[in-house]
Length: 69
Image 1: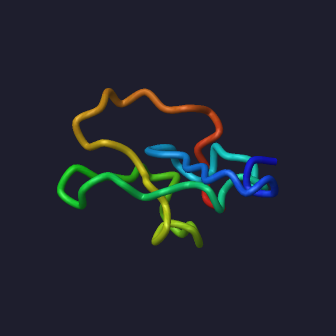
Image 2: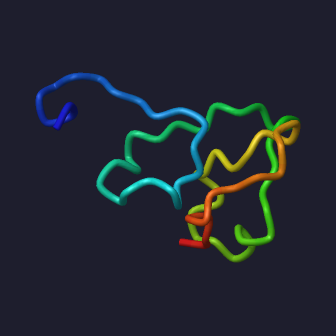
């Protein structure tokens, strides 16, 4: 909706798999490589290269929506 209206929008620091496919193009990988990590559910994910993953310093509590795309 925002993109169609010409409004610049970005989504930061969320794994792609928890986002609806229609808004994934607005997701930005902004976590520094040394702060970035992935969980076992990310293994084999086709979107991992473009995914923000998780902060390595974060608490190990994740959404049930975490799954390979």
